[in-house]
Image 1 (tube, rainbow, N blue to C red):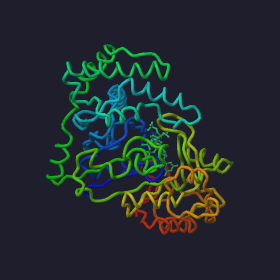
Image 2: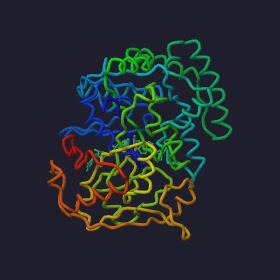
Image 3: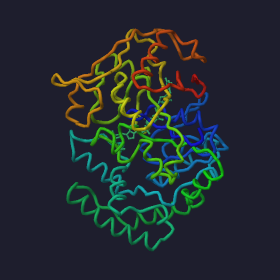
Image 4: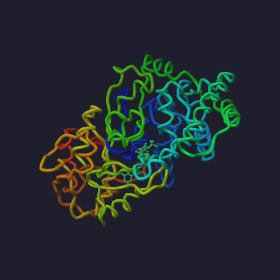
Length: 424
Ligand code: GDP
Ligand code: IMO
Ligand code: MG
């Protein structure tokens, strides 16, 4: 499909990076449209591992143009470090990377406010990545954000920084009991970034629309997951952007009618990092086993990920809102040795059954999952190259998921490495 969006349909870390890298060779552009360096997208090629935070996962393909769209919140310091680290590893990062002049910038006070707010919330904290994401998007909506383009108008940059920092310092000291910031120091740091970023900064909206007109193909790389989407996720335990395919247009300037398809990415089980409801969470030795076999530790923060069975109630909802006709199922190999595998098909609370994903945090937090149980295949799948070679019980599991979600499955990932995938 010419213009496709790859989107996580769970709580993030579904393996989007691997799938984007896999598809990127058939696309001219790979575009990030939301989120920021809270994302950690892993690509494994041979024994080399790349974890990408802001740079799109198409960067491992030399001919692909990588775009950081206007909907992304960019921490210039982090972006420059990421570019340097990639260059050091021998990757070409130059003309193949474009950064939107309209993207909002994460500033030091966003990170401080993120941390201060989490501290103040105590046991009600969100478990954010502390990358300043929520305060940055809040400023964007409050019309006090500072964009990449502002780096190139130094006088107004200084003025806006001073205005903002005066307000943020009051917040930091009076509400959060934190140290105030110095506007001049921040100005100096960002002006330094401005020059280093200049070669990458451009009008990416025009670039994308010209590409569409020229018949080029674009792959959109969602960050986070649909259940963390600010509108559709488990509010308020969410991130602050539209992680669903709905964010593509506002986050990149692609006209809505020009998106041709959406590929959902789901793990064969579920994980979540940070706080918030997780109906199928396993706090027992099975959960521990999934975490160890799946190496479920955050790619950005290193935190252990919470683990649980596949939640078909949640994924039916997210494949519906994304319009996924097909999905990529990752990490099937992690289930290889399980004797029995459960899939949540409904929730139950106080005698009431929920087959549709409920809005209420109260319901989600107290719902008991209703499971269907399938026998495990207890065979290694990671060396499989063809669907036919999969154990029958693994095929039965995939079949069950397809029916439960009413989608097709077009990729089955059975290992971390780029080549460990079955294409259907
Ligand atoms: P993303 O944020 O959606 O890109 O996913 P992450 O990179 O945060 O987490 C996915 C993790 O699972 C990474 O460590 C990947 O290398 C790994 N991974 C991806 N696909 C598979 C798979 O099929 N099997 C196994 N065992 N690991 C996988
Ligand atoms: P990728 O793109 C998993 C989670 C955080 C926290 C919540 C809010 O790698 O799938 P934030 O820092 O965004 O304000 O945190 O969202 N979160 C992620 N969880 N994968 C991610 O990204 C995430 N990005 C944010 O753990 O619960
Ligand atoms: Mg990740």
